[in-house]
Structure formats: structure tokens, C-alpha cells
Length: 134
Image (cartoon, rainbow, N blue to C red; front, side, top):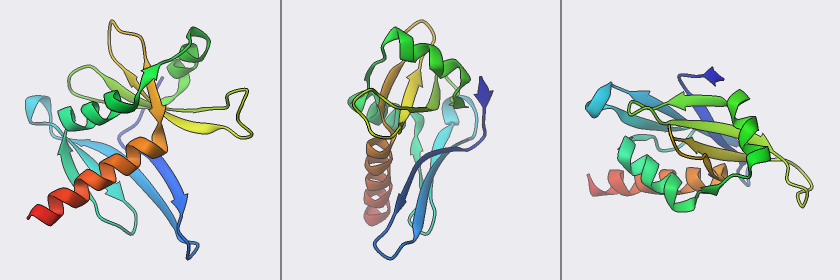
């Protein structure tokens, strides 16, 4: 297990060939902790840990046991409540290339995974909406 202070959850290319990466990082400790969403060349902001976990849980599904074992070696971002978000690069038999999966690792529960790009898009949207409200 490799715990990181900043986790890249998405990387995509814009029509002008600019590469945009989205990162997550934890700011603060305990109940006051928040998750910073950093978008290179774009809008960045902070969301509550609960909001980020809600988005991940909305899209995530349980992993097969065979794939769940791979999560132990994936880089992960530790959250204050004991949960973690891990980034697993995995290729299913039906995929031509591997994909990045954001895996929610909760003590005492099986890991749940969602396509990382979908979670990143939802988090970027929430950050933009928060900034529009200000």
C-alpha cells in the first residue's frame, strides 16, 4: 500500500491538445478535514469529505475478489475517518486498454470502485457550481 498526499484521479486531452489532470488532496484534520480538487489549467476548489464520498458511492460498485486483491498495491489517499481512495489501473477482459478506477476502501467493508473519469467529472462540476454561487 502506498499512501500519497495528492492523488491523480483523471487525465484527459482537450481539443487544443492541452492535457488536463485532476488531483485530490486532503486539507485539515479530523472533522474539519476537506478534500481539495485541483484541476490543472482549470477551476479548483474544496469540498467536504462527505460530499466526495457521496459522489464516489453514487457511482461505485463492489469489486470482484480477484480484482479487490490488487487494491492493496494501488496508490491511495487516506481520509480522516479511516477510509481511503485508491487509484487502480485495471484492464477488464472486454477492454482494449486499461482504465483508471477510483476505489473506496472502507474498514470492515468490501472495496467499491467507479470509473475515475466519471467521478472526476462530477467533482469538477460540483466545484464549478460552488464557485458560481459565490
